[in-house]
Structures are given as structure tokens and as C-alpha cells.
Length: 146
Image (cartoon, rainbow, N blue to C red; front, side, top):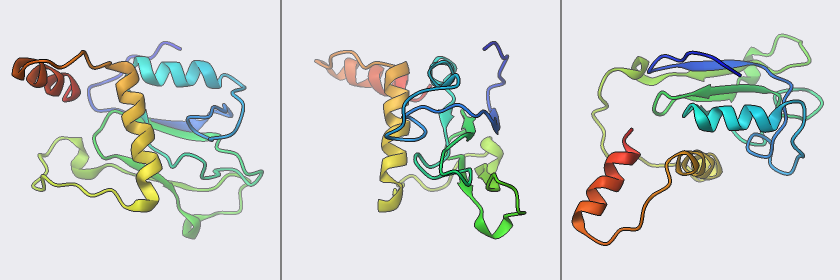
């Protein structure tokens, strides 16, 4: 998949692709492996909740990816319109440009698996070298901030 992305991008759609990164416990199919690899290669994190069905058949096939910090997508049950797909609500805080005033973030217990998946995807794209000196620590921190 070739797609030119801007610095702050979000991409969503009815991909019909399945992969354990989006739906834990499922087998990858319908381009799921390629889509997951594309998201890693392009630093586009899956911002939905892994395992939360987006279709009435119980699968996670409507997917949203973003490189905007703290962007999230959730099923909006109150906006359901009768489709066999559930309505998704994507929130992009501060339009991805304004600095956040808060420096201490809390991850609610119910979202720990999503946070873990995001960290895992980022670390796959940016492996950390061994840390032996203060300079190594600073270098690792800088690589995580990209």
C-alpha cells in the first residue's frame, strides 16, 4: 500500500482486514498482515480498542490509524444508525498541534491493553539499543519522541 502521509494524519475505513493487533485471538486475513505492516512502517498506530467489535458479526474490521498523539477511536453506541457496522467516533485532541499542559498521563485500567498495543507497535518500529551510559538514555528518549 502506497500512501503519502502528512506529519499529523488519521486514516480510517471499512478495511475488512483482520489481524490479532486489531482483534486479539483472530487469524490474519483479507490483507490484515499487509495492513498491520503498513501501519508499523508508517508509524500509524491503530487507535481503536483492540477486540472491540465494529461490525454486528463481532469482528473488528472498521479500523482507524493515526500518528497524532493521544488520538482515539471508539464505538459510539448512541450514534448507531441501523447499519451492520457500528458508528465510530474519532477524537483528535488539540488538533494535534497545540502543546498539552498536562505532563502526567494516566491510562485507565480498561484501556491498558490498548496502551500496551500502541507501545508495542512503536517499539517494533523503533527498537531501543542497549543502554549503558547517560548519553544512551538521552538517545533512547529522543528516538521515542519521534
